Length: 444
Image (cartoon, helix red, strand yellow):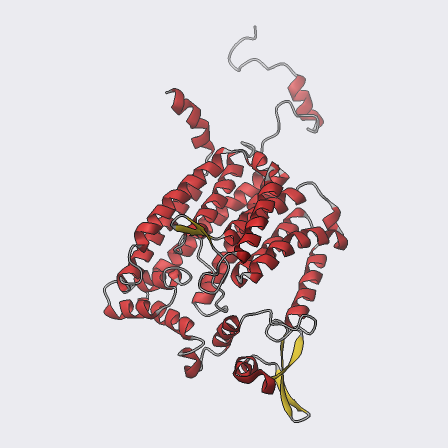
């Protein structure tokens, strides 16, 4: 009974809808990974069991994140952020895995520091913004943007464009909730858009075969001195100052496949992954296609079916109802998180909740968008559903911090005890007047 008495306040203050939603998403992950494994047993053998192991580790991380008070975690925010930056530098000197410097090998497992960077970045930014007012001025936005650019640059070098794209929308949401002026945020976003999409001339004749991809993405073409030039967006072309490509060739091909979805030639080349995703989703219909051999064949042909394109597997296995159900579960987490952010009075706690919700929202938006063809393919996982230990652990710890803030919020929004100074005069008089005798009885 003694142990139960100690746990009772913890259990009573815990946000159980978030926990139920998280466990449901994890169960869905196991079922979806199992579906992909059955469709391709040779390549994905043992993935379901490994995902179950990562879920167990993630649940332990979730519990640990709820036990330590979030204010104590905040005091270590800069230290954790600095250690994470050191890991991001370390992976750049480690041997590449599948052409990218993203993973640190831990015994038989691999861990992505870029996944952990999403969480330590939110902690550091929330701790920085909690009591400051200088970001109300345009010049005050410089330190938060520098805090974002450092990890974003290191992650982009790996290269990991998807994770890099997560940081800036998260920064925007957190600055807005911290009180930054909307006109300043929109001005910064407009400048970034001009830099990203400023037309840069690219010499197609000198580019060789690689020029074909840029030609498809060009704003317009022209001939200057007998040579062909295409005006493309700066990241897709060559930066005049650095004289190097910001985006890798495979990333350019992915965008080309997205822009030319209706082209049959592209569907079997640059847009093959998106084409197969749409085939898997379409085969599910309304209620799913659980026993169809065609579905297994579609999933077998779909690259990254158990990781980035797990949402397509859910659509093929459980149809539109399964896809809508997953989104409703995420919606329940957002509603509970918004309620926690609205009630908590601690500025760091509120910014931490907003950062976690923004992180989840952007991940879900990009992953679902690229799966159904509304966004280019960027290699984004679906939180708590896609296969992968790093993503599963980090997202579970993020939800643990969200629940942590909810456990330590004010129990009610009622007026504090004995706080009646601001009441109307007649109400104050009622506090000072002795209780009247009960009706039907004599006083005294």
